[in-house]
Image (cartoon, rainbow, N blue to C red; front, side, top):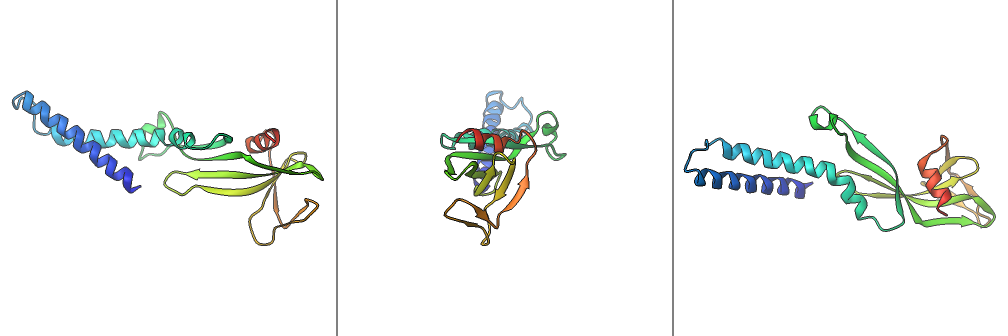
Length: 174
């Protein structure tokens, strides 16, 4: 976040410098207020660009095999431009490179979910999908145990709606 603040200030100074150059070329015909106005426009433009490009830039850094399943688009009054086009602030992706199946339970898939949110560290969570039962078992916590035969105990299971994108990606990509 500090780097984005620095980048916004640098953008503001750069655009203010251009405005100062235009004032000098016009021999003072442009008003003095054009310089701080240009700085503000430069910083605001950078901030808007950074918000709208965050999702694409972040997804582009993911290795091949990480497939985005869901993203959250947000509108807010302090970002009036977001009413025209919502801003993506977080997403979840399935890392298909980590898919694991046990031969005794072919309808269950263990996979890593990648959870990313703007200005927060990315998280990886181990999840078990029951493809036939259309449910997800979160494998977090000390009570979760995986037996030699592939059965899992202590997982909290959540029923998933039909067409859940994470379930579909995990079950079809394995």
